[in-house]
Length: 119
Image 1 (cartoon, one colour):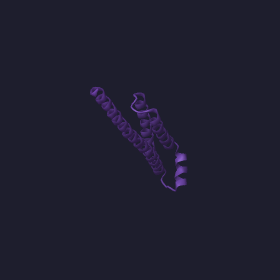
Image 2 (tube, helix red, strand yellow):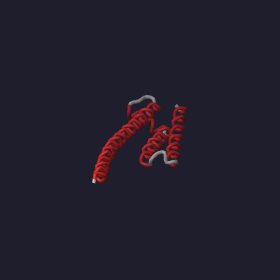
Image 3 (spheres, helix red, strand yellow):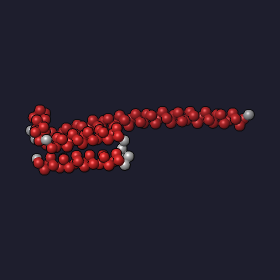
């Protein structure tokens, strides 16, 4: 159990480091990095607090405490992926609307050019 919790501690520390480096290099926006950092910190806290992990395992009815960690991490990351799916969907809709506006503007510019050359 200790080796598994130590592995999860290392993974969460690496995730925190990866997010901070990506944030520093402007590969990820601040509003998205907060979600990843919160998930990584939650993983770090749970992997280092055996008493909290065992209490959560008892509360959830799971006999093996590290399994509780994986269940909670899976739930957190599923929620994060759902949130990012919503964001991507909104961005796609905005791109479609922007392309439509651009097409309308190009149409108006072409009509104005035709009027200008026709007179």
